[in-house]
Image (tube, rainbow, N blue to C red; front, side, top):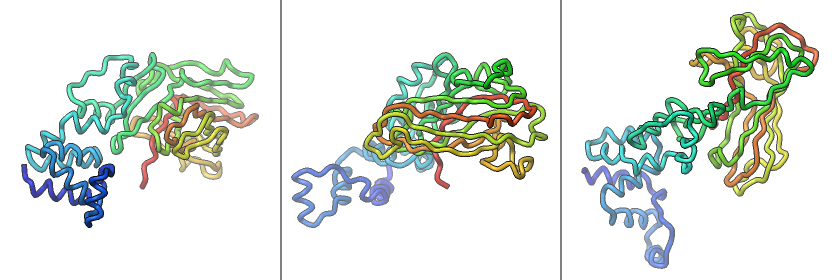
Length: 313
């Protein structure tokens, strides 16, 4: 393996390679060495493969895939379970044990991309789990059967259907009602810590979606529980937003957050966002309410509510 490349990576990582201080390190620091230099000294004493594993695990999945093209030696280490296990959530074994179907994989890298490029159904098919491909942070979707759905005095207007593009077995179908109330909850401890999450409603409007003018609705994201030590949401914190169940070019004047068409043929509209701190306990409650008395004819299919890490642009 090329030692000059390893040295370059060590220099590139700089102070990120600093290890916890000890008395000997403090003595060395007093003799003029910086903590970054001490970190590099400690790493240089390790076998090459361990050095590379430690370096790569401090980058990102995308960077690791790029580094694997350097040489066969780098590829062998970059594809190892020791590296990719660092990118998987610490509780990934417990999560996939709840999968409806067996999750087959031979390496941790294969498991990572299985979850990043797809999803697994959990808890009898009411919940789906995947990973954000760039960061490895957790994504969850609450299927319609996991949601509480009410329709005021008109519960008969809700039926259950199946659409071929759905990941779930059933979707809730609402036809022509003056109001609706959709809500779901998820435990904060299941989500990635120190992460801002964006919440979306996934839905479809049937064959009339491109002629539909949109129905404004009130969305809220509320945290109920105790805040951890990561300055996340506190008990009772709530964010509200007005959203529109329509795409922009057919919704002029309706106001609110407009929906977007997805590659999987579903539409999504952003309901709100929240920060999940370190050690948060309790539940995040998401709710979408149609306005009373705004009676319109529409064909609304609800796929579920999805929570995804916010991606900085």
